[in-house]
Image (cartoon, rainbow, N blue to C red; front, side):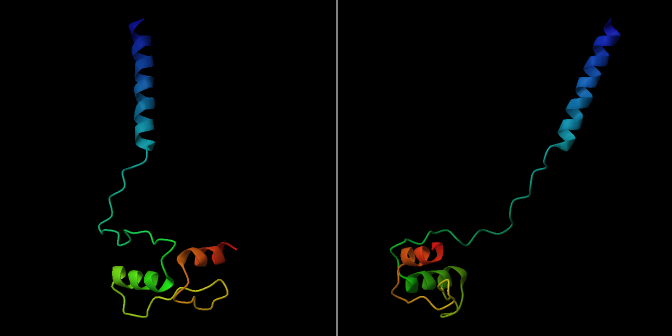
Length: 89
């Protein structure tokens, strides 16, 4: 009788070990801190968004360009909300 119980217990422990071995491993955390820590307001201008991206990522002035779906430059005084609407159709 005791042997059957330990056999069932042994099978249970084997299943637990197999499940533990197949569980996802912990992923090492990123070694860098994310730069993007803001969300651009929808009433902000395209000019402001471009300058903010350049500032956050340390890019030279004029290197960021937001475009319309047609590929043309977005006007500097256009709002981010209007630009998003253009892209969403």
